[in-house]
Length: 207
View 1 (tube, rainbow, N blue to C red):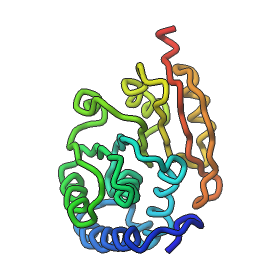
View 2: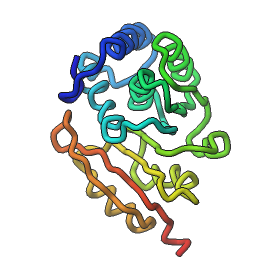
View 3: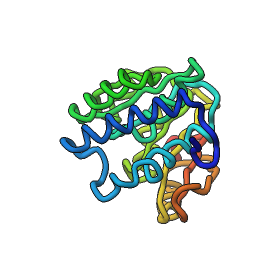
View 4: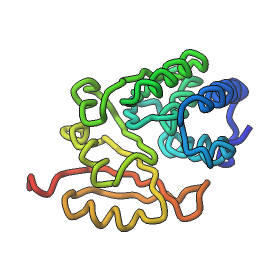
């Protein structure tokens, strides 16, 4: 099995297939992703999510906010399982989705835990972290507001955000309030979309 042209082990494939079955069962009862995209599970959701891990594959502690149907955070946690190191904190305030994620972790052996709290409350509960991820959650300015507490005092901290074709407008808007370094990674799944890698975040109002 390949994800974005990279072969994954049989063990990881088995974990991903177990997740696919679990996802399909739960998606009939709760809205895990847009119904129009459910048939594109592997390309639209799994492969797209896997790009984050592939950009930064060394074991680390991730904070994934708005985890919803498990993208990208649970996919990262499944890919980490084979390494036996690293961890993903899945932040999801919707209790039904949080239950889905907990069950998915048990069924796949993913290296993750679930925090059924709002994103703005997460820094008080999840103190340590090396990187943050989010997909289809909020405007970049709001994502940076969520991420700011973890950037403070951590020069090596990184954030990886999936964004669509309108990402330039979001970046320009965010620069009105934030100073940050940016690396733009072209999506291997969705033409015109990107993953924005953010580092060295600082509020302009504090300068």
